[in-house]
Image (cartoon, one colour):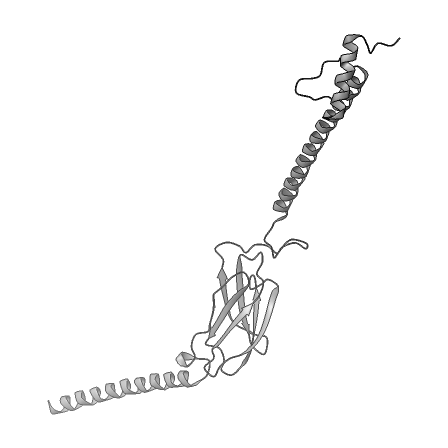
Length: 232
């Protein structure tokens, strides 16, 4: 009985020793992973986020990048598309970076940002999808500042042309009416001077106006009626 109890206690001690060694190995491995740069939880996960994105500007925020290291930010429609803007940056001691970029994204339906290290290696990629594609770039000669489109300008010119045409027709019509009345008046005056007995149109006075002209016309008419004014 004594020998059996001694053997049992010895086996339990060996088991505790094996467990302790295993725990120490795991702790040592975790410490190594923590201390070695680029492994374990000592380094935050690399991330690149795009915020405040419009068709003309955006804000890029990066975390988990190498600390105090130069990086280059490449902007394109997609990661494999041609680069439209390159921005050289330097990260903080904690590996973060934040920058506001003004760039034209005309015609883009999404935008991608790539952080590239000093050796040209890609560190992290971030992207943003537009709800609606950005309008395409205006063609050369378009009215970009006034907001007036070529269609609206054409309608405006047509309206001005119609107004000018209406004014011309109205002026021509008024001229014809005045010219016709003037011609008729001259014809009436000539007829009355040749034949004083010709009936006058209602509402029109004889040429000559008032005064001496009317008196002479009245005396001439009286002589004609009495026969004294007949030629011999």
